[in-house]
Image 1 (cartoon, rainbow, N blue to C red):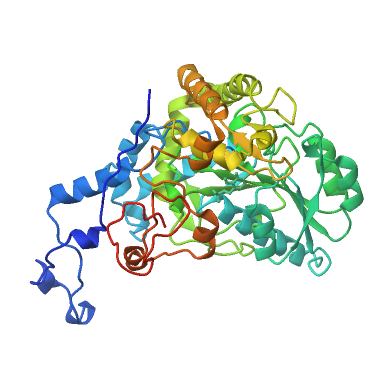
Image 2 (tube, rainbow, N blue to C red):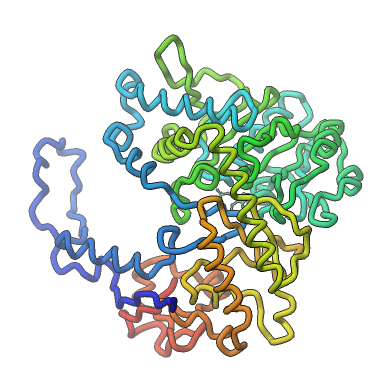
Length: 507
Ligand SMILES: Cc1ncc(COP(=O)(O)O)c(C=O)c1O
């Protein structure tokens, strides 16, 4: 199968507009004068078929989970079941307003309550808050809770350090520093936490240790009980980054491993959309030490009634509007109950099986720096490609030409030229075989082809450094700066001016 992505010369929706509404909208008379705009808004006015075609064409210039296998390691990019979408769009879920009187949203509150209980069983922790909007948000909120806990114990001035392994995701140190702690790295040994180094690092300055298990090298931290004991003996707390929960779902849980608090990314483990940086859910589950500090409101049940409970004096307070991303809660609940307890265990087992199947196949093409048997994801190193002047980035771009998404690259940072691959349970053996064949073609391609890839996408190779350093975030800027699609990585002549319709505009 040769892949060729659609390539439309698609203007911004604003540029499709030829007219703007001139008359006030129907029903305006019922809006009090003081709430009305003084000047009209130039919303685009386009016929429905044009709008549908515009967005459909844009979607065709994208690789998404519904069009391609998405082996992005550490991200658990699962297929999002359509039944969960259907349920989330039912009026009872989609049209409730967060500030409706509680008596009128009992069903929504019951669903969130039930999801909390379900996630309590999954994590082993008694209390759950669905509020945080992403994993990183959950981390940050949890570290505010850690601060509050040590403040109450009179230890905050002393406990200033958060420890992290060198396999940690970048959001971990970022959250630690945002929450006012100093982040301190602990080295790994053979891909897992070096227990001796951890023992040497803990002290009465330790506020906590953040860890994901299995870790981002796909390895289960087998010394987790010793790790927990080490941190606890020093008076610190153990934080479970739940990004990799998919690998242990229903098989074990963070409470049993000795953690004090965890976040769960519903958009990973519970198959809700990642949303391109949009809505996510970084649910927090806490053990007894930290539960009183969970954000408000909590859901309380008395008899058969549910209510939002703000009366939690030790809570860190409110961290998000309303009660989190309710639409995601509906999808996650649908995913969980459609699997049932045994089904969730199968999710974990199958994800691990997929990862080992693909890992063994691809391990014949590139070296695997860590053990052969892994959990839900594995790491390869692209260093042998260097002999041909090829980098991991070239391989990742070349894979796009096969119609699949690229793996995570250059992470974890302890592996040179890393490629990190996660084939979740929703992928069939046929899809895995297809990916393995695509990978083989890409690895054995010529350096010239690899350097110039992608060849078959709507947007060719962009200058990623410049895109990161000088991002153009406004559609007006996009109109004035066109990337030359034929000369990868360079801006077209007349950058600041003339070519508003170049489809290569990538930023
Ligand atoms: C190990 C790990 N921790 C934390 C995060 C952050 O989660 P989120 O993207 O939901 O903020 C990720 C995201 O991929 C991750 O892989």
